[in-house]
Length: 490
Image 1 (cartoon, rainbow, N blue to C red):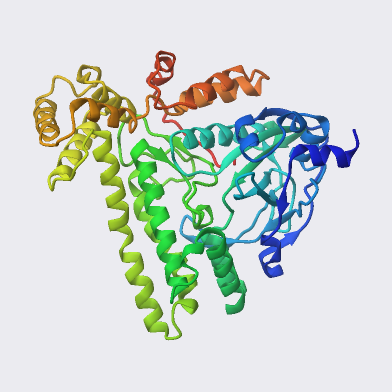
Image 2: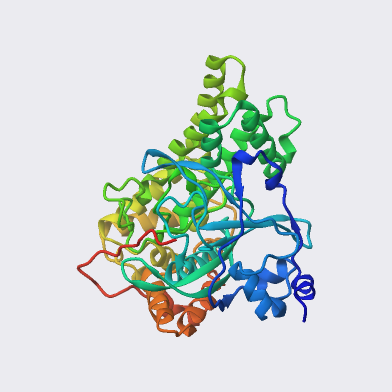
């Protein structure tokens, strides 16, 4: 089979609209070849939806493309430039170990970025080696696919290949490359970079590109750049509310990790909360709890304010008026988020309509869960199946009183108990990627056993099925005196 024939059969259908932006935005370069690439996992359903040939991707030529050793026909590899506030401190950044191959046009006409992560040094690598370790790449694969199954907007993982080379982190680890699929890699940090290093013409070009890519319906508006800000706010309000509703903690909500498309991006020290506690932090570097679970909505507001600052020259010719427009828009975010979160919490409790005291009912439950260190996911699952005895709250006076109020609240709506039960089933996952289960999968993978990960991915693919085989994956880890910690390996 010739190289050209292999490329055609693989199904790549690339366009390169990002490469048409001013050269300030990126650097053209190919990935660094991997010594001996080997396919570890391929997301076949995702590949098919992208219009790709699964069998061809598994061939030597296909794996070579996933490793960056061969450039698919039509691809135009580049590394994107961006900036970002990292734990509140501004830095000029960029794709230090990633290459955007181009944009795949799917059979449905959708446009998605195809990016290789861990594919070698770029001009933005600073002191990095441009490579990635196998464990963090598999971690991103597991968590991003679990998020997709949970119904949370996210980048997705197409494949992980090993490179046949080692990378040195705390220890020597096998190198790997992740193929990431995203609506785009446009970030708050992309605008921060152009605001810092470019001209107003560059900024307008980026804003117009973002509108065309993600918000074409508002391009004709009188102030389309204000509409851009408002639409990004709406998507982030939906996204952060969905995180909170399943107990997801991103771990490193820097502005360069906030995608304007409204997708979750950059799975570094992320994890899911077990016992409910707004102060929960898993990241080993977040020593002050800046990105704790309970802070995520506030940090989103802060990040979006930084985005709004970059748009000021486009919002109005008068600076004072531009600031006023930006401030008014940002001030709406808290209400947008709260509305989404409250609607989601009502659904988790089987509530269809709205009453003024609903928020109090929810907050009382969460307060009890925090006091008694009740597991977040399993508590709502127990309520879903009317098994309060399965929670640590059962038997307390506070819970008995709350349960009575909740039942009375359900009785004041027209929908039947069966309808409430179904709403709760579809709103409360049976399982999440429990941290200890993810670690078990990664530990086995490091020894060459991928079966543990494959079984985990299988049960995580239908989190609302509430099937018997999911029960084992909902159990809590053994009590430990050492808090769970995650690291910025991705």
